[in-house]
Amino acid sequence: MHQSNRRSAKRYVIDGLMVEIGGFSHDTIDVSRLAVSIVRRADVDYSRLNARCEFKNAKASELNRPIASLEFGHRRGVAVVLKYALAGREFQSRDWENILSRHDVRADWVALEDVFA
Amino acid sequence: MGRAQLKALMASGSSIVFDARARTIASDVSGMAPNGQNASMQLPSFFAHGLLKNALLFKSVERGCSSDPDGVVSHTRLFIPFDSERAGNGGKSLVFGPSVSAEKLGKFFGVENIEPARIKGDLDKLALLAKAPSFSAFLLRDAFERAGIETDKRFFQISDTEADALRENLKAKLKPLAAMALNLSATVVGNAQLDLLARKLWELDDPAFLMPLARALKIPEADTTSVFYAWIGAAYFQREFAKRQAKVRLLAEWLAAKSPFPAAEKEEIARQYEDDRCQVRERLRWAWSTAAKIFERYTVSYDALIAGRAGPFVEYLQTVQTDFTALGTRLSVIEYCLSFYDLTASLDRNSIASIELLREVARTMRNASGESESGRAAA
Image (tube, rainbow over all chains, first blue to last red):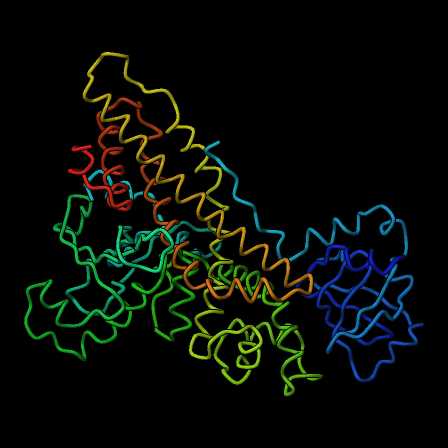
């Protein structure tokens, strides 16, 4: 996947979404369908990610997904950006993006229409 | 404000009316009905002083000096009905601001020497009600909680469950700012969860935590709390406006519909009706479209923040306090119009009651637009 695609992919902010890496829980800052930005921990080596990884969310079970591959992207302040791919067909079919969009903190914002047109 | 409009406003339970009177309410309204029972309960007066025991408060919109981009100002009006059982039959009112004094209240009630200690708590409540851009249930309840003023929560007509859900929803929107704070504050790196930081941003009671973030966002130190609070308030208003969209559409259609008067019949009444209808429609359109523009700027800047570009968000924060107040003013205009529609939609369009109500709302809207009755007649 090209880096420009990762950068242009829409980012979502999801309340309570965590990434668990080898049993270590990480807060997510934002997530796109291609990459996730997490708050890094001192006790995890992000250059060697071969432990079991998954998305976890206590409020919405459809966000609980195993991650098939996770790869270090770059560091951004206290964050580390990781490229990922989900297991299963969801990633390919864009269902995952729909799920992310549904749980985004902006999901309840409705654009006001011109009701006088 | 005319009697018909007053009755319509009180019946609608809108966010421009705050009923502080002692009264009996259905327990399901307060969200405190045990096991879904629909019992009634007695609500004591919101204010402690006897002078204010029958008080109702209104937000009214008028033309005046303000920071509003269109020069419209929202006033808070204390209304004491002549008959507490039939408040819609009229009363006397006083416009007041956050600095309302015991002397001013005494003059209004015709009472000399109100004991300061007995009225102090009520003056604090009145000041907070004047400062709030709207009487929306959640906004008021939250404002009183933040100010640490003890009140009976049943007056806000929002259940604990609803208030908690709204608070969590709004707090979640602070997550990108919490992440920014995490980057900026050496004291919290590595030992704080984003959720905890978002909570601190919601509570706004830790200046040491807020300061680095405020600096990064170019917020003047003295305005830090009010800017963040205004941003949260605007997020809340977005929801309030969206909730009203379907009804505003119906009202817009109602106002655009053909005149119910046959041509050449009752010419003066028909002309007046057209004039009133246009006035209400234009003010409603103004309130709705200017609010939509504010939300557009708000959303674009927040999207940019999430996308990693803080610039538009920093720029937006420069105007967010004005926007928060402006949204309250526009919501008040919309609420005035909707309260009229709630009542008149069930009536014949050319019924006397409907025509009179439309006329009263149009008069209020003319005041809000700065167009005087005499000026309009001359034109």
